[in-house]
Image 1 (spheres, one colour):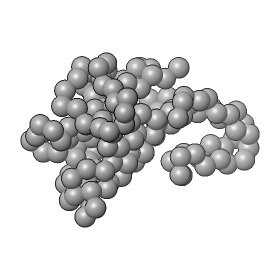
Image 2 (image 1 turned 90 degrees about the vertical axis):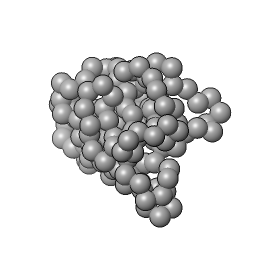
Image 3 (image 1 turned 30 degrees about the vertical axis):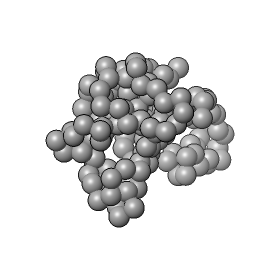
Image 4 (image 1 turned 180 degrees about the horizontal axis):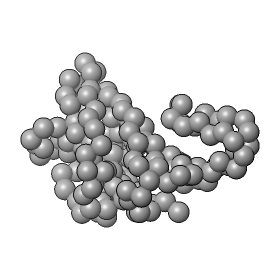
Length: 144
């Protein structure tokens, strides 16, 4: 999904399966998504994270930047069953945990407060102890 700026009038619009609801005149939101890729290390903006074939992608982060500067995140992953993954706003702070079920799938919703990051940032996620081969890096997020 490419980055888009959405404007809605007084009607409420559901975005990303209920992740955000926009109401009121000229409520602006920017919506984008980035894949989560199996990769052990990268820099703070994940400048070298790629997965052209899609074989290493294990999840997706949907990002809605609200008019007040806050961001709503919806994350879905498929990894090791019955495992808790710490989810980070890379080089900033932990946002919370995502726990996978019996089939290895997990999801979470997080909010990033306004003025926490600029327009370029990234995420990473890994289980306790950060074992090699189980770390995920997002591709770089670039907002306008």
